[in-house]
Length: 368
Ligand SMILES: Nc1ncnc2c1ncn2[C@@H]1O[C@H](COP(=O)(O)OP(=O)(O)OP(=O)(O)O)[C@@H](O)[C@H]1O
Ligand SMILES: [Mg+2]
Image 1 (tube, rainbow, N blue to C red):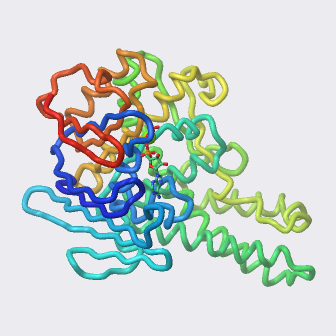
Image 2 (image 1 turned 120 degrees about the horizontal axis):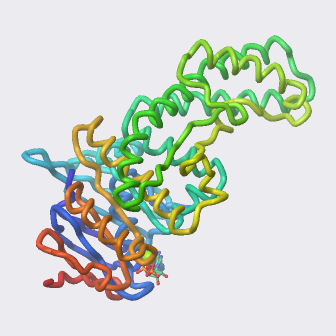
Image 3 (image 1 turned 60 degrees about the vertical axis):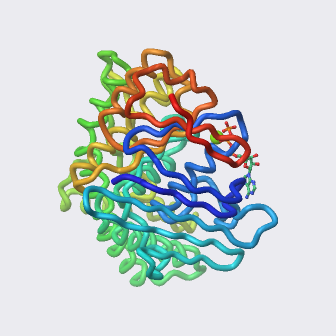
């Protein structure tokens, strides 16, 4: 899928913007605080339906304004789709091809892989970051997963509410245990399968960027650091057993302590050195980027189209070799949107590349 045209009104520091793109690599360069990341945020908003860095959606509305608007025309071959998102102080309106749709209808229409400076936390940070990563991309790859995930978290919330009560009805808790096992097992199975599927792509991406022989490995970890495979009956058995073991603790703390909401993704470099602990900064960054780029191929395989790739400020952190390798990979795949403070970060054949200078909320096409 490609973004052909973008239009913004009162979106962050953009008063008005109309822009056409290259089908391949689009590079936005400019000094700090000019609007590079804001532009990427607008593109991502059109793909996933919410801004990737704003805590509150209304943050994207230009200061002093009451309404922000964003429109994208996407297409591939003879297929075209237009997405419009309007965010007001108290309302949000989404249109697809001119028709008003439900707020979550945009998600997944345009697959996207986003990588930014905070993604180092994928490797360095806590398990929540890695779970969010899996969930966001799994939902783009398998639309069904959104419901599976939602059902589990609804059950989890209800079970937590029960555990917090002063007097707990044992039979009621047993019903919720069963629900938790049933729904949680599905989440585990889906996540496990994704990791197994995407692993070869991630290993390849990692090797291409690092150019090294060191091999990255990833394992989905459930129930206190066990890799449990994908046999549903076996997962349910362990789930049940763990719930039994933790019941006292759960009752004391009024919290569900067992289930996929506590799982993790273990990232290692041969011979099983945990990247979070032993990886150099560059190794960690390369690993985080490989996780994302590996998904690009996986999404193409399962959705039959390339996702958009959004890379915010990645170049500055890599050595020249890694930079070259990354650009080589990008030129042969999806439409990519990159930001950098310096045009010099891109010293390569630029026939399939468009450069844009970003300056105080204005964007100008620049000849190479
Ligand atoms: N809602 C808003 N309305 C107006 N301006 C905003 C809004 N939100 C953010 N800004 C401003 O937009 C400017 C550009 O931000 P952006 O993060 O896009 O910069 P950048 O070009 O990516 O810079 P850097 O190289 O430092 O990452 C900042 O000065 C920021 O204060
Ligand atoms: Mg930025």
